Length: 290
Length: 280
Ligand code: SF4
Ligand code: SF4
Ligand code: SF4
Ligand code: SF4
Ligand code: SF4
Image (tube, rainbow over all chains, first blue to last red; front, side, top):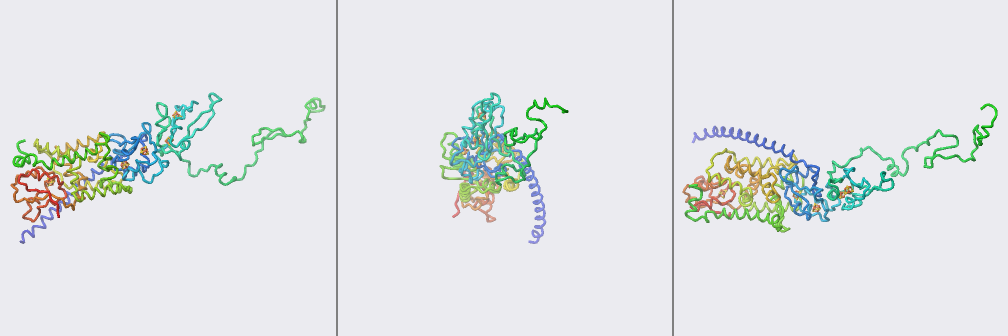
């Protein structure tokens, strides 16, 4: 009885030390594997600008954690325009994306892709497809777009599901012909959903209008900027002391009117306080020193 | 191949009886795959999605609990279909035994079983030894990534979803990962993936920890030590306590979480030692 009892702690001590050693070794190995995986995933998880997420997708960092790569959104899209990324593509493996130039989102009223998503990676809070934010269209190549050459195109304008709100046409003077108008498509960021239909439809060989992730496409005014005329309109009047009228150095009796009337001859009735007589001949015939 | 596990059983009880669980299993594995492939191949959309999450007949959602857990740990609360789907899968495997997924559903099992068969067929004995506990470490790692990095890192390499998604949506280079698993199982470690590393299997093992369905060595006194069950079993360490533990008061139930309920031990035993049982 006593022999096993005295032996037991020794054996246990050895095996415990072995156990701890083994455990530490395993922990190190697993830690290294984890490090490798983590580093690989950092490289593999960046989304290129030409790949767009389906409507309702969370911000990319959150999407990458939430999406379980099931493909249900892809299957439930009636237009079959979503794809699942494959290993070796530049897009995080297994995640859904679409390429606007190949086929844009048709902005289904019932948003079946979002409804299908089991994880809220496509946020079920999106119920109105017009609130979707897949990206932002930019008329990126004004040299190529034929509207800037004075030709009538407007295909992007006409195909836009949010026509006249997300894209409107801006009339400009055609300086080349001197007598025609340019019909310039202008995208409005607050209404564009990034569906990509404009890019898909652009008639050029390479689209002049492209949908980009919003953070790449959109500029932002400095927080401290105020536009005077807007402030004035909001306040119902000038917020600063009105400008003092500028005094021009003009010939007597003349003034320059800001209101756009140009140079004004003072009315003849004003008494002329001048050494020159009204009739130039009088001056010429005048005697005495000049 | 002069001698292989199950040879005696085939000789004494016929090929069919010595392969009945294998046949059922293959039928089930290919059946599940076929259901998923009906849509992409023939346009009959009974089931959409993948094993990660699927929708059957527009009514039955099923979601992999390990994946949904990772998604939730990254900080996003899932949609109702996801929650219900994961709950259904949890209940299903909690009752049937978690690793039933591994041997009856998971497509990677087809690859690792092939490697194991080739190892036996060509008597490939080379290889390293690894702890079978590594899978628990990996499971911990898989679950640690989403809260720590915000990224579902495991899905960048997971062979299970790579294979299933690859078959349904196209592989890209994902077949390389599966080739690696195959070669690793074939030459490096016997049953190296499913039996040592796979955290998906480890998670399902936990889910089925209290399952009433089990294999039991009910006829263990008839055992003639032919070792066929040990040779065929993907987790041979689970058999010994149940088969040889009579003196120590263990068994006859195979109690280990690791048993995949593949039924191969039942198939290959010529003495009918093993039985599939349901604990009352
Ligand atoms: S809104 Fe419709 S067209 Fe667009 S991605 Fe979703 S399902 Fe497809
Ligand atoms: S349905 Fe949701 S979880 Fe599934 S692939 Fe699409 S975005 Fe990811
Ligand atoms: S992406 Fe183009 S078509 Fe779609 S809403 Fe924006 S401007 Fe319109
Ligand atoms: S469709 Fe293309 S070329 Fe035509 S106006 Fe739009 S951007 Fe320009
Ligand atoms: S004990 Fe039997 S049922 Fe369990 S894994 Fe091994 S062979 Fe399969």
